[in-house]
Each structure stands twice: as structure tokens, then as C-alpha cells.
Image 1: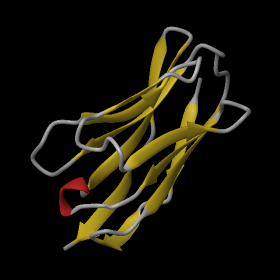
Image 2 (image 1 turned 135 degrees about the horizontal axis):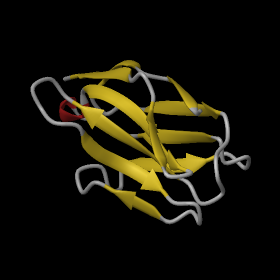
Image 3 (image 1 turned 120 degrees about the vertical axis):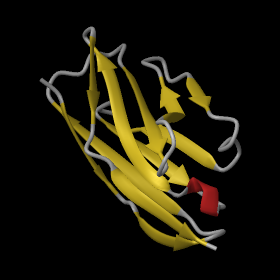
Length: 115
């Protein structure tokens, strides 16, 4: 069983920055895919960024050039550095891990960007 704990959300003004963290406990394979999704009120959950086991990254077009996903050396903690935040980035951000044939979600952390 894998548990994910997110932190780092909050309220920030437009143009500001936040850094989200997601710490995983339990068995994580070296080939796991870890990523961030977000869900704004009234909208579907969408991919923000993900990183594969060989550190290949993928970003939503809306965040390219502003957000950066990274992973700790132990491959059990991932980060999302969010710069130049916009009001449309306001959402609950969820950490996601796909490992050993299963998928796990964190509880979510709120990011609110004020204009």
C-alpha cells in the first residue's frame, strides 16, 4: 500500500510562486510514474505534469514554461515548482503515483491565486 501526503498549497497573488511537495510511503518501483493533477470547481481533473521512472517529463500546455516537476533522489518525493501563477491555476492539486500495477492519489492541496 502506498500513501501520499501533499503539502505546500496556499494563497498567492498572481505572478507569484508556490512549491508543492508529495511524499510517498510504501513500496515504489523504480519504473513508477509520478505526477500532479488538478481540479478546479466545476471542471474535470486534468493532468498538470508527470515524470516517468527514467525522468521523462510531460506537461500540460497551459503550464509549460511556468511549472517544473522534479523528484528527490530516493524517488519517493516529488515536487511541483509553480512560477508566474495565474488565476486560472486556482484548483485543488493532487499527487498521483502509478506503481506495481496500481494507482494512488493524495488527498489534495488547495492552490488559490488571487488576481
